[in-house]
Length: 432
Image (cartoon, rainbow, N blue to C red; front, side, top):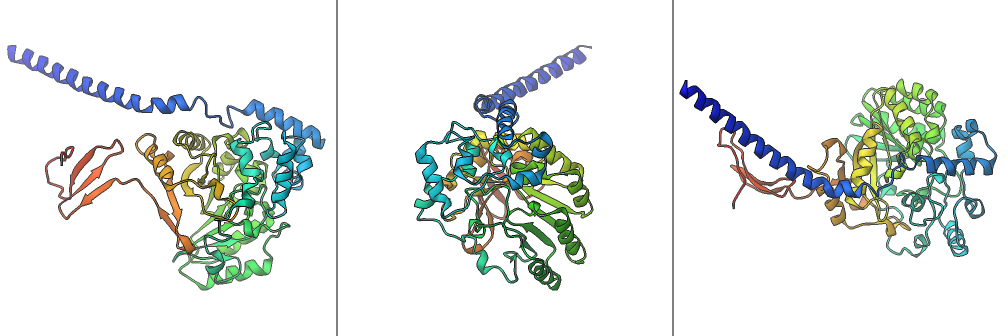
């Protein structure tokens, strides 16, 4: 009996000790997240700004004299993109110098914003992260570092409208149209002065190239923004790809859920649903862009069975903050969008004021790995110069290696010796 009591006592002591260790560890982990919990209080999101957005939307609607039904019509949104300073100044408080600078930039680089995306811009703050993505900046003209085609797309195009940089996949560029011309756009050289979708003849040549090269199993439809095309034209392109036996999956790259979510209609989703397997990658850059309207659009696509990913671009003053990027990724998961890539900004002519250092990108990744769920962690990508493809950039977790073991660093900075032999003793923190 005494032995049983001693065993029970020892067992309870062991449980208490384990719980003490677990509680200490939980307290340590909680301490790590406090900086983010404090920071997120000042990070504005599309959801927290919902009432403000409604006021701005009402003002724009009154200016144009439109009904709610017209506002929700994507054709109306496209027809009424704002592309002149006088109209813009009705909604943003612009100084005369700002007006003159916008007009100067417009002589070289086209700009336009949808009424919807304009409603997300702070009228009084020139540093608003939404506003900076859509409104021209004088630095676009003073940039002497950028390259018109840093991806060398002109030299990786074996057929009209095709860009090919990888063995088994390629891009079809189907239009130069967008609902809003991003100031950091990598293809601003293609925007031109007018909207110009690819001709049927050009697309047929691109499709013929794909059909003749059986190693192509993955096709990305991009632009411009392919969802500015009609349902009929998109359906035709997807149907032609469906008919090519070796094409296994199709992808669409679009910023429409961000800049003009009204385009995502039940009719569009019903059509896209026919073309399984189809994936969509979109392009949210800041938590303020994740709105109720964007949520509605993304959930419609998700319910049509289309997986959604996000390709953010790391941009100075927009999202180059670990807490802002984490909040963006959390907001995206709430609307069924998986953070996929975080691109390092390309040195495109007129856009280098958006560029950050690689070290900033690595710092953001350090503040994501282990600090939040894996679903909220994109892959940080640098596009190798000259069209040599995407290169993942990671913090250094593998310190050294040999045939018997590797030395690794955990997300907390702890160093471990990890054996390559499955029957080796448990690995512990490495003392060097």
